[in-house]
Image (tube, rainbow, N blue to C red; front, side, top):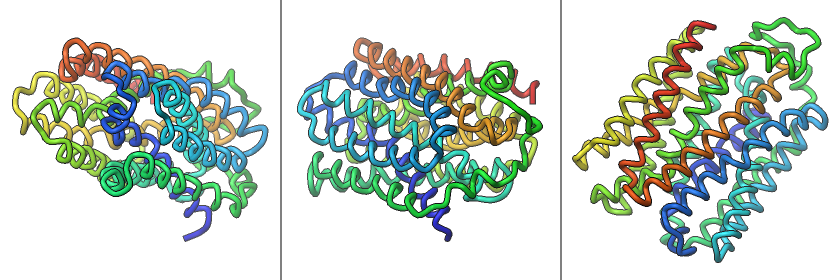
Length: 383
């Protein structure tokens, strides 16, 4: 394995950990901080809120200072943010920690997506699904690791260990020659290399459709990751079993990405997105109306299989459509709009769940899945 591949995998594992972290420690953190579901929803929403300006800014910063400083800086700030969460004794210090976690996560995601194309040579769809497989491994292992560490060293100790792991990306990035990545020629972009800027992105329908697809999809993934344990415990599943099922969600989610990496035919990406969007809508409808514990458990696991390939396949559409010179800014715009969805829906679900319960709060997730399906239909006619 090359140093570039090792760094890319370490970053993907760390960012997978980042996206699963709040859901994994939510119950323990809520008890420590003495906060209710509405404030838990606020913390989850803050993760998406910080993404909005950071992703857009990082796209430009990467072009100015290069990928290496952004990768290293993001890794270090991630460690700092987790330490802040570990030390938080009240709600607002935890908010600061979540904001920094989101900003640093955004920085690493902005860089690691285009870097993955170089680390895993092949088609863009193959590279993105394989990269997201490693991301999913990080998300899958995190709840298991957190559950184990909580029993052994408590919340603070567990968070400090995860903070130390997040620094591995920075250590490996110090030895990677990032200049070689810039020099590599574009292979798949459907837009011919030419002097292009932000106006090229803003005037492209595919850019907007991909962004709106992420707007509707990102909060669905975040909602299940954050509220699956609460949803299941409300269905009389024990806390330990609920944490294990959350890991099961991430395991199925991860396996689906590996399968997609080797089975999605080139040129069928938008059809795959549309099919999964329709099934995704059905998953949320069942989650809202399920009266049985066993069906709720099955729904969480099926959601992992459906959610897993959507993001990498959507990213493959985006990166395959634009020249590599625009990838940083394209990802920035994609996540700027996606971050709005990630911010708004968990906040609304948290507030609604406070009055009606988490299961009824999933009605809002079903509405978002309907929006994703509509956008996927239009995208399939454009690409």
